[in-house]
Length: 265
Image 1 (spheres, rainbow, N blue to C red):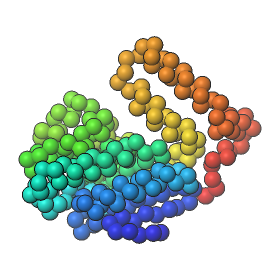
Image 2 (image 1 turned 60 degrees about the vertical axis):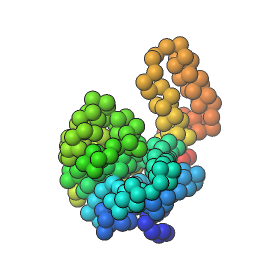
Image 3 (image 1 turned 90 degrees about the horizontal axis):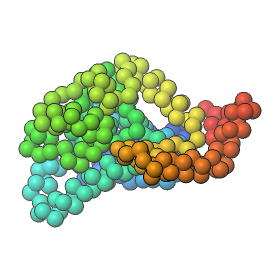
């Protein structure tokens, strides 16, 4: 395990990397250092061919309580251009996670507030403890959940976002599951078992196909099903069928053996 505060990056078996936010004394709240470290870690792991799945987690009692209030005060006092550059770096963090070519899973326990809810929304999959709690709490501080908004709205929809962006209500884990933010719920002591089940399902898929599947969703979502979309989807599958990964996947299925990308534990 390599440790670089404020993150711990753990590389486990089968190409599973865990990125653990390590500011438990402030409930893994964001500041400049955590934003920079998390952005760079996600970029590095995305570029590493040995990594198959990225798990994002938090150390201590919370997943992430969002923005560090001391950091927010510093930015509020900064000149507009410096404030804007800082906001851009935060927005880039969420974009980096959301556009990562590798499957990403948020392992949420405890609080996931503000930017913490943004992280859970930006990841492909969210596995949460039944004790987890979410909120877009920004209006309580006189601001808005701007940087996280594209990902939260994508996860829970405009109608629900309209409520929670304004009320800043706490959202319990089961309600978050009902809203579509959380994919899997588990009791606290079963959280890692639920997470592992999702990880193993991801490891069975072809890595290039998974990256292409994520690109497909971004290309097709919210577009009318017209000739342009039909042609685009036809070209994508035709191109992918001709790849070595697709040929290997089909051969492995027909020969009743594991595909070459499936590694032994």
